[in-house]
Image 1: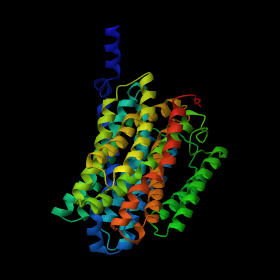
Image 2: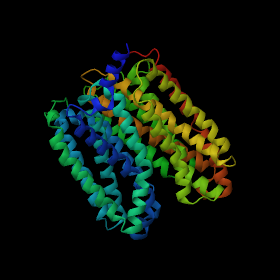
Image 3: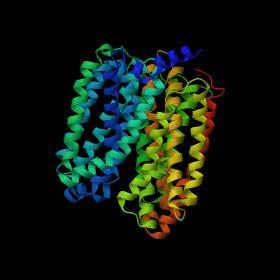
Image 4: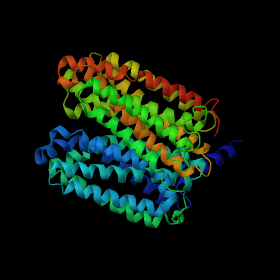
Amino acid sequence: MGAATEADEGRTGWRDLLAGGRLPLFALICLGVWLNAADSLVTATIMPSVGADLGGYAYFSWATAGFLVGAILAGASAGRLSELFGLRSATALAGLVMVGGCVMSALAPDVSVFLTGRLIQGLGSGWISGFAMVAIALLFPERHLARVFAAVTFIWGIATVLGPLFGGIVVEHGDWRDVFWLFALQSAVFSIAALFLLDRAGRAGGGPGVPWTQLGVLGLGVSAIALADVLHAPAFSIGLVLAGLGILALVVRIDHRARVRLLPHRAGDLTTVCGAGYFAMFSLTAASMGFAIYGPPILQQLRGYSPLWAGYVIGAESLAWTIAAIAVAGASGLWDARWIRVGSVLLVASLVVLPLVMADGHIAFVLAGGALMGAAFGFSWAFMSRRVLAALSDEDKAIGSSAITAVRQAGAAVGAAISGVAANLAGFSEGLTHASARAASVWVFVAVIPLALAGTWAAFRLTGGAEKA
């Protein structure tokens, strides 16, 4: 029995994962995930320099919001485009789109061109990430999926820390435009490598077309949510969030009846693995956004931390996420379901702890709350993704795998908007003061607890009685 166990571990271990010519593909996927994650975060430290050079301080938040809109639309369409043009050609083209967006931002003479470049970067990086998910689903055996997704999680965790740091270092020793030149270079390398490494997946799949109607409605919904995130009028923000959520629900309804689908069959049915899995990913991601967005200014205002030290405290989430993901990467059988449930419960626990300690608790408890949030995703994310992929039919493999990225980013947009509304209702829209920071330290977490509970219910559904299709 011991020998059999060792043999099983060998077939699912890191050595076997990287054997059989999979190492270069694995490296390509990691580079694609890095480009998507790091470029989405890099503006946190360079925007003051961009504003001093180009003006347009009032539009700062659109550097992130515009990127996110592009990324969600691209991620949602990646599956169909990979079928239509072939994974190899589509992935190489995505790299070139990102190169174009980076060059546009690097050469921008004014803020409008800069923001257009950010939107194009979002499209390019969203396609890159979506095609990476398709490549995982099509080119890696199911026995390796948990470890591949653990590696993806690790890259995201590293990017959370290194993305803003990368931007800060470049600005400190050079020019903010150099950040985008460096990303353009990395994207070009990715595009060229895709042409060689994805040759086995290079033939077009003859997909049925692009679901333009669903993408148009999705774009409208995401734009409404993104606009809510940048408005400072709480009443309008609340209305736009609700409208955006309603439009996203409409996308699922339209897609169910469409000839050319954007999502897998019964993706909106919470009694299925796909439906429960996507809903859990969406809700849990949305519930986690307040800590990363509002944690740093709250810590700086209430505790007098420097931006660097506040960033290190928030980095506890990424560190715990990475450690947890690597620790459980080899779990299988009953344990993958258990880790999904443990992760969802830990997220709820973090949202109970953080509002109690953020303002007055010992910093160790703040670190513990952030670590609970990070560990929640580290323990559960890879196994949720693997369950969804395993439930997909061959027909839905491409669109279902790329939808994981789009669902996660849509959840991030919704969570950022809801946290923003809560913060503005707490007084953030009037300026960062001791009183507004103290109120926000409670409400940005309490406001999303219902989302976390809904996501936990879906996670238990995913690991319990959900149907495969």
